[in-house]
Length: 268
Figure 1 (cartoon, one colour):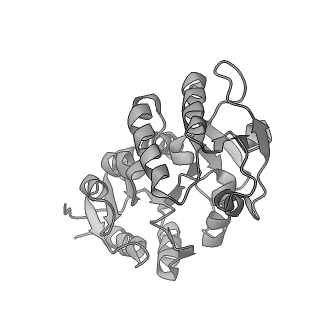
Figure 2 (cartoon, helix red, strand yellow):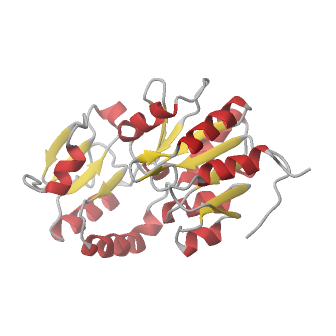
Figure 3 (cartoon, one colour):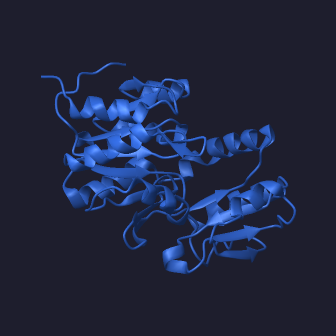
């Protein structure tokens, strides 16, 4: 899908994993392009599936000029103020759905990580089941200052509200499990990156139609389809590319910089 860019957006939403961060690194051209966009008056807003504590080092590495935009975290379930870590907005699971989802995953044989709002609760994850000796979980938790609370399961009626329920696995069966869960629980998950961006935009008096966004995965689709101008990498899944207005360079090859260049040099 092609579209002429006639004026720069007022806000640029940037997905992190796969789009900005590829193979553990940020392309210097992408980093420089985001700094240029911020200097030229575009509000740069990171939008990620990670929690704030998990994305904070990446946000800091960008060294964007102040004032800093809020960061959309946990796929839109939370918006954080990056200078303080304060939660500005959250849209968690309803408790029965979170408990059901966690139980389903645990019965499938996985240790389950249930993310909560660390700024409000004082810890990051409920951990249902044991992950001792599991190298995948070990790599995830290694070096991260995360508060973990062991649990036998989520309470469907009480306790901290859950922002994300997830498992870790390097094998294909986990992909099939999560695909099935996304299908079965899609109607019960209200948070998206687009809903969070609409909340962020209220503070700036910017409607989604005046925003631009770039992303590479299925959880980016509502955002890509709902803003005024969007882009996806050429190697993103077909459904993601169909949701975007533009296609840019493949992941890890300067696609963010390419998109920013189009935004800051609109057609005359």
